[in-house]
Length: 204
Image (tube, rainbow, N blue to C red; front, top):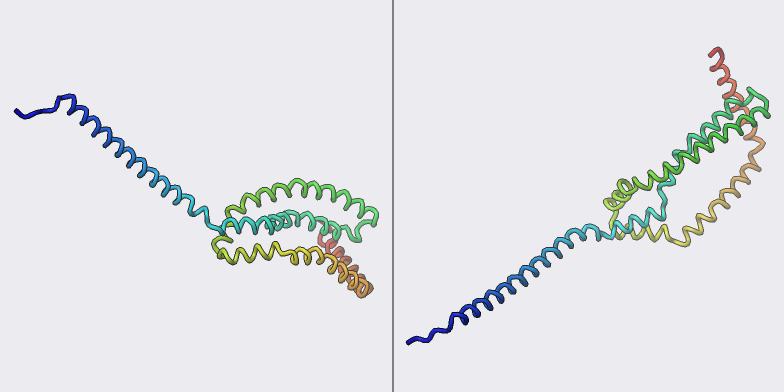
């Protein structure tokens, strides 16, 4: 008679086999999932690891391109005062002109105080969509590193700090040499503009 193991032995063996196979399948599934997640994470992180992006942000921090926008916004205020000065030249006494310009200056300053932070904040927001992508697309990492080195150069900073002294010295010498010749020309120009301005506004 052939000896057959008890039924419980078959069940126990089958249970262990299923358990072992289940553990193997679970381990394989976890490994595959980890590999898949790692690959997906690497694929997502890879574009963000472009060194040019960090270099472009550093350039913007050193360069402050938002200052150009601020100057553009403030320029109309400066032009308004200059035009007002020309318009008043020769039409009112010097005392009334200066008083009027001083009164206008308060309005101009109010505009500057209100418009400047709006322009600066908008420029900083738009940098992410304009300047930074342009830098990344137009320059290699090596070129961006050179720009950063240039902007961080101590010699550049020293030169920029020294520049106003040179400009002031040159301006003072030119003024001392040419003031006598330029002042009459300036007065003639402002008087001619004032005369034509008055003629253009007569009867309006």
